[in-house]
Length: 480
Image (cartoon, rainbow, N blue to C red; front, side, top):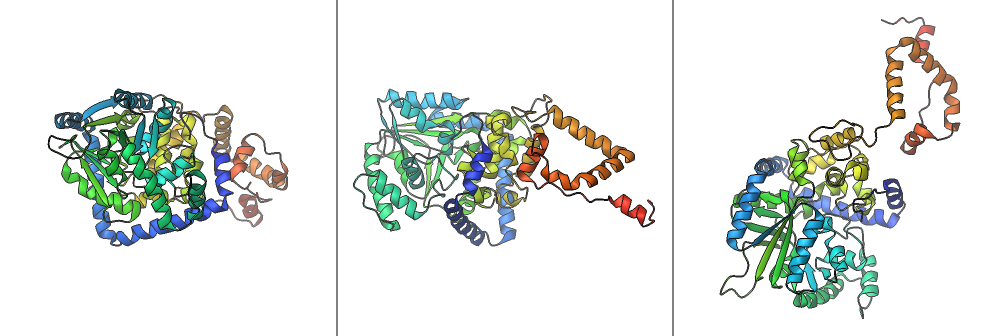
């Protein structure tokens, strides 16, 4: 997975498109997820009302973000949760490591967390002799195969049952080959139960953090999140700054939108609300709870009124499930932690346009992502903004990092020439005549310079031998 480096998108995309098994796996999974979501939100009127509520809640939280974060810290501290602030992933990793080392721990069990993926936490801990085991089934599967998540909600969506069966047989000692789903689940459950008992520190993400009460909400289906946050004596929750909401009453509408958009469920099997460490007289729960708040460019995103809407995302993955680009490529082709439409607007802002600006071009602008987004993020508007900034070398207070990286003298001169050509009738007539004469030779020209880049994703146009003006003149028609 990329980490502040330029990704070779054409190579990744070509590889994904030439993998028929991947295409089949994705198609099957996306059809199922889409059908479940449509079944749950079958009433368009009520769904739009719910979306409007979710949009209002997230907009209100973002308007008050600095104040709510301070309130969250205050309430969490009062509840006994220790709050840490990290500007960069490196700082967040170091905070986690120091907590782990303070307890002489070497075994960490993890619940699903995209922020920990953003931090590359597992790799960092491994470098410091700390084992970090993923306990979400999908995350566990891809960790066995030394891969990163392919989807925000369903990390192993790119694998089918046969591939998982072979992986378990090859990677888990003394495991017989089986393609029976119940038996595969039992195999994973047996391994993970032993790890839960041995875990010294638990790490989780946070779906919503309630400023009003200092409550950390965690949504899951497997129970592993609850085990990670209660069985070990220490719990570390990692969270992006934007996950805070104002009131406890804000959670139910967002939860309904999240579960329905992600997996087509009315509610997930488990909804964990963590407000403090274990209290006197309680029989379970961690003795320490730590909350690590990660910025990683979010403050800069928040400062721009348009780009700020990126931070409304509740990580449901619906935009991925309905994107014609993602559903044919999968997440790994994007090369970064956050793939699909939401990744195409978030990642360039975090990693910079030089590194990840190409992600903003991985879109057909069909608008399917906006139609299903439960909190009404204007994804296509932000994509256009990022594409425009790729060519704008003008410093403004809210310019995205790396803006103007695509600016080219040759391309600028080409467009200026095109403009002049269309401003002068005689020049336009001359160029049309020349193109008509050379039309048959254009496909034979060597693909170099601008012609090379244009021809990578387009068929070269065929020009008529005579222009419309010339044909009209021959017919005796006059310009009106």
